[in-house]
Amino acid sequence: MERRALFRTLALGTLVAPRIARAQPPRKVYRIGILSLRPTSESPSIKALLQGLGELGYVYGRDFVTEARGSEGRPDRFPDMVAELLGLRVDVILAAGPALPALKQATSTIPVIMAATLDPVRQGFVQSLAHPGTNFTGFSLQSPDTTGKRLQLLKELVPGAVPVAVLWDQRSIVEWQAAEAAAQERGWKLLSLEIRNAGEIENAFKAATGARAGTLLVFAAGILFPNARRVAELATKSRLPAMYELREYVEAGGLIAYGPDIDDIWRRAATYVDKILKGAKPADLPVEQPTKFDLIINLKTAKALGLTIPPSLLLRADEVIQ
Image (cartoon, rainbow, N blue to C red; front, side, top):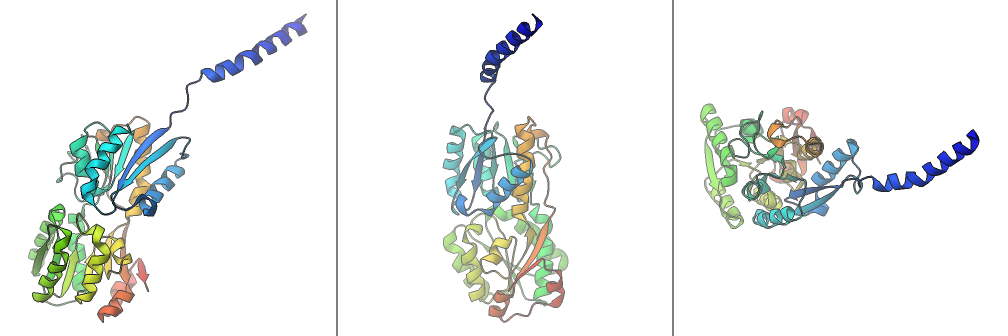
């Protein structure tokens, strides 16, 4: 009797189990929006983000999918791309610095992770680094804080009283102001080369050589980054040893760069994605600063310039491109 009752119970369980399984809600697949300057197929930063998510246990397709958009070096395309991502109802957006103004204008609700911007407090994206208080969080380059260091490295590279030409546009005005302050404190002379569009880049170099500038400092933001190769080529052609903020310029033929590892920032940004998808509010997540800075030197470019890199700089370099 007991055996027959047991069989009936097991049979009933077999019939009910599939119904219980079918009744379980489907697993949510999160949609992550991504805005970058480069074409998405060529972006090592996006690959670094996916690596970071994988390290946290996320599986593409099972836990999340990405909606990645690359402006191909044209920041003016970001407003349309932002509108497209909002229409797709993404859960979170991770964006390069030049895309942030368009996001700020378009949404105050969708979480935005800054994949590094110059100074998010002064730019109005967050109220403070410790307490963002908005739908923005992520990483700050705090570029003005390292501008003086770049000038110092330039002076080690080419000592003397020759003027330092500074190539910049309005998106990097906080860096230009920091450069002015650092130069005034040290008694160095700067030559301002402000540009308003890419068509003015070549004339800026003519102005630098005409003023007999001895070196060049290039900021990464805005117009210049999408034109990194052109800027590097013009610097070599103009015989101007140039210091850059990001390694991409050196990879494109520039001489020397000192700045944060952007791909490392994108990999670390995965932790923000994780927290936000688990319910954290961007307003409560402190903005972080880079922890890894690289000094990269291109010896091929140095040879083309007829420049000998001081051994003290070579010893401190994190990477030397032959």
